[in-house]
Image 1 (tube, rainbow, N blue to C red):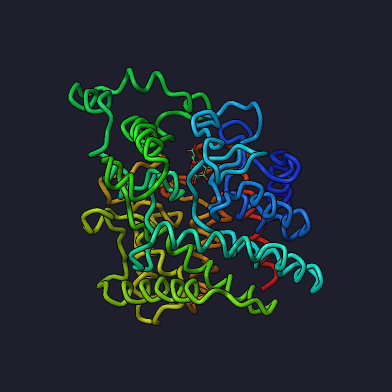
Image 2: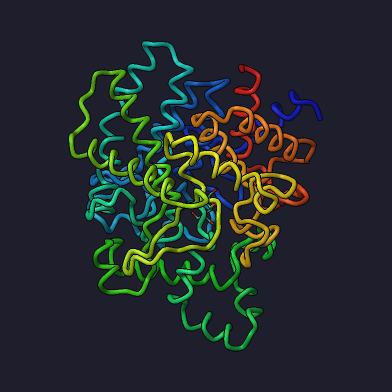
Length: 443
Ligand code: 2M8
């Protein structure tokens, strides 16, 4: 398959998943609009249709709550999904929009980065108009994140559910969820068999069990969802009234750190004064990453249990994210580059979401080992910004070689063999393949 065939394949997937002003992550498994998916999708769309890319981003704000929150899903009508609109009942909340149904939690705040990337492809006039239409909404979102999720002013925001981090089955979340397992999972653990629970899974119509979260995690995701819903999705109530895990999440906060830098750039381009408390919060986040990376022997940083302060040291790609968060000292960049090129993280196809020597590693297990195109993309961006252009090029080459020549672009791939897994026709894999090819060709 030639590079231009791969580009055509990727474009056709985005077209197929387009439903007007936004794009489904995948036709059947993910039939609504997701927050960070749409950001990656816009980054791909910008190369051939920057106006459609703008629409993809602006359509996300249909779902913005009055308090500033951007929800992780905006629901389309009448399509089957395992965690659909009735389960969330967003309209019970005064802050939620009236004309669309949404989830009541958020997802990695990639929006400001997506706005900046799309804007690179716009005329000066369109760019300014785009920034002016969107900046108040972005400020409201970042302000909500700090107000609601970092009232202690640590710089690292707390997540109230694994679905918020986007990599929901990452080992540090899996581990933290163990103590909150529902009775049926506790019982299945005792019996040593999950067969009955596996048989009831709605998501397994679209992908086999070994490629989806294990049932212990899947049912705990639902159970903790019920707990946080009873607490009306409020962090303090969840902390005080439930045993549902709360995590100061470095993966999510690294995305926020970069998003803050993007927001500053957007504001400066249109002469917009960002609020002082937001600027101070952003400074705390970038300082936290620089400090954690400098203090760590091997460059890895860890999320924390919000209640106890205990570090969650399970190995995963989240621990390497200071690279994406901002500019690090050269020595700290080298430490992280050494880990991500080690045989555990880069056995054949880099970079595994969980290293192959981790007890959690599963070759095709959802967020527990396979290579995802979006995490590779984040690492490529981090490497480029931290003076590692050659390694970034190598990672782009390895990613494109892995996705090339298959019947579709998939949700994720084996780090050992490149085998594709999860759902096919996966939008962000298509969009970021386009972005990698087009940026490589432009260099
Ligand atoms: C996956 O998450 C959803 C819940 O949000 C699910 O498992 O049904 C994750 O990979 C998430 O990061 C992604 O945004 C979503 C849609 O692609 O799917």
